[in-house]
Length: 292
Image (cartoon, rainbow, N blue to C red):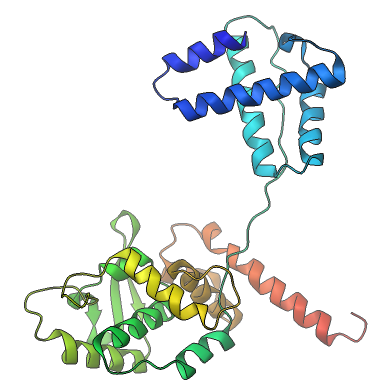
């Protein structure tokens, strides 16, 4: 039966070789489990929901993550759905099978004190690259823009009269993000000092050779500077985006405002930041309450 299923997968162009190998390994692993614990030797067609749930629990007891268990169960669901379609079995034992819940990972972010330390204690001198680097890091923190949005920021996207920048996000969705006055002053000084002699190049952030910065360079800059102050293991432009949202929420901004600033299409994508705020409240509660 497994051979028939694998032949079917190979004939379907939508399945990669890696996927087929993963299916084969998962089903063979389940078959070994049946042999060892239920003496069902190569009798995959005799399986019922109890055997599948037992295997799920067994994998978790072995230390497999919820994500891994769910992937393996997906292999079995596809296998038994195939057997049912070929009328090899009359009832699909995996039809009502539910995998373990995958816990959401809280977004990593940099604390306010760590960012203050970065901007106050690090030396960003007047050389072009250092000024550019500071502005890139501060713009990430001030606006929460994505890496691709910063790389593609153009002179015309800086709305000087409105103290804001215009960003073209995912699915060509445009949004306006305000910037504070000191950042606007620094941006104008950077543009007039270093970019006015760059000809017709429309982009704000350039390499030393005068071409548009590229994602790997920006990532390296952010990682380098955050490494000196941040306790978080992740130190990327996306962490700065998380930091922007978390700090706004911690200081009283409502979710809908943060959603619009980040360019999220739905509020559910923004709600993940409430978990970080709840964790902060718990910590403060434990420290402050006499009975905690």
